[in-house]
Image (tube, rainbow, N blue to C red):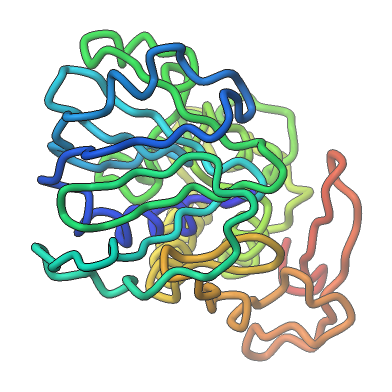
Length: 296
């Protein structure tokens, strides 16, 4: 499933052709994705201006002039592909991630025709993605969003906040970081990568990030720094493409070439001075990759 860097990459690709533009036409080629689309989905979108395109955890949020928010999730295999309508003149400069769309149209379930001249197709073979319209005044109570923890790239997310969230938790550190109530947007790949950079074992008890008084240990400072660094590095690389993730250009993300431990079982640990080997084991039903020599 796409994690925070992949979703942020998509947001950056869509923003130049969506923000400030209106939905000239909306095609809902089927009435359900993961869940049924609202019955008035097309009518509530057509003619509305996109005032801003944001991200919360793994969700995209398009703020509309009507007072609604279009809440979108990529699911397991969803991607947005951007192209220009035939004969359209570009009214906005495309972003760094903008290129022409691929020719695979089979699973283009929802298509946005924007007044910017862009054609934006949501392609989702497995149909685990979702689109939902929520009144802006109710967004704070939206069940999909209200329990989410802090954004890991936000200013409020620091060692003190993470220590407080993990104080008293007897679960593993990896499981705690995957808990979207503790920190929003992290997934299996980037948790494995951040823990390796911080030299912390995924088996470590989460409560060890805090002292008895609840203050953060030095290891917690290192972990927060590692989380922010790996996420920013992945965003710069356009995310990671292992199976389904594509940028809005239809191009692959490139960060998978910079993995230190994820999917690197049996290879030497890249930590300077470490002679360990990357190991893999099952943890809470997911593959965990780490070095048991330098990660304690």
